[in-house]
Structures are given as structure tokens and as C-alpha cells.
Image (cartoon, rainbow, N blue to C red):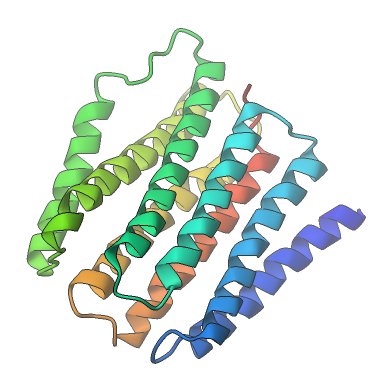
Amino acid sequence: MFWKILFILVVAAECVFVPLFLKFSWPKKCTKSLIYKMVCSTLFIVAGLLAMKIARNHTAYASLILWGLALGWVGDLFLHINTDKIWVFGIGLFAFLGGHICYIAAFQRAIRDTYPQYRFFRWYEIPLILLIVGLFALYAWRKQIKAKLIMAIPVALYALTISAMLVKALRYCFGQWWWGLHDYIPMLFVTVGLGAILFVLSDASLGLILFAGKDKNRPLKWFNIGTYYAAQILLASSIFFVYAN
């Protein structure tokens, strides 16, 4: 019971510290906003660790989710450093890229545990991934999102990776629902499915902030940060429901 109460308190603390981070990061980044942001990011790692302990889930899935959360923590640190140096942004971007690769591997493990004969990609997943990337490209064109040439390839690679993460997450959720193989299907859709969707929405709004001159749009900033931390907490909470070796 103690650990469950502590988990609830951690989630509640996230709800308190995220608005504080947003308050001190406006209108520009500062040392105080960096501290609050890293508190928020540390909380979703603690949530993942507590979920692992409470659920006694020490599977590969849980470990990969925690690695994804940890890389998100690194990405949060470097993306918030107030500098124009492109390599700092690059480290943050590649940290998140690595985090999404961990999430893809986690969802793939979960799928493989259900379908041992399942290959890494089914034929219909690739066109779905390309469709999402195409929608990202259309979105970038309509919103006049323009990245520097040196960042164009890494950003495109990131878009491809997060699209694959979304497809894998939804593939797992719908597979479990279709075959009725899981006792907590609604919670899978909330933690895995919604978590992945919110991550994509957060990154889409971040593109506007970073590359379309929307950095002074406060509601957009709130949306970006709110969906991001909700996504990470939900993915951390998925450790309660997904056991995959």
C-alpha cells in the first residue's frame, strides 16, 4: 500500500511541478525553469521505477520503458539549455530518438510474446509508418516549418522513428483487443496507445515552437509540455499492465 500511495503522490507532484515549470520558463528559459523541468522529468522516471516495484514487473518490457524514460530525461536537459549551439540541440534530439527506439523495442517485445512467429514488421505497418511521415511532411509544409539544412536529416529520421513508435504501440493495443488476449485492454489503450498519441502531438507542436516562429505562443507551449509529460507518465504506467520478456 505504501508504494501505491507513493506512486499516486508522484503523479500528483507531476501535476504541480509542470505548471510551475511553465510559469518560470515564460517568456524565456532560465536556471529556475531548468531546475523545475528536471524535477518534472525525474518524476516520470520515479513513476516508472515505482510501477516496476509495485507490479513486480522486471521484464525486458519494463527495462526498455525505463531506458526510454531515462533518455527522455537527457533530452529534456539538453533541449532546455539556453544556447544557439546546434550540437546541444543535436544531443537532445538524438537522446529522444534513442528513447523512441527503446519504446519501439518494448512494444515489439510485447507483440512477440503474444505472437512468437511475428516478424519485426508486418506488411501493413510500413505503409502506415510512411503515411504518418507523409502527414508530418504535409503538416510541416502547411505550417511553414523550416529547419536548418544541417538538422533536416536528423529531424526526418526522428519523424520516421516516432511514427514507427506510434504504429507499434497501436499495433499491440489493437492486437490485444482484437483477439481478447489481455485482462486490461482499456488500460492498454490509455497507457500505451494514448501515451504514444500524446507523444506525437507533443512533438508536432514542438516543431511549430522551434521551427515556425511560434515560440511566443503561450497556449501552444502549454499544450506541448502538457501532452509530453502526460505521455511519459502514461508510458511509465504501462509497466503495471504489460509483461513481456
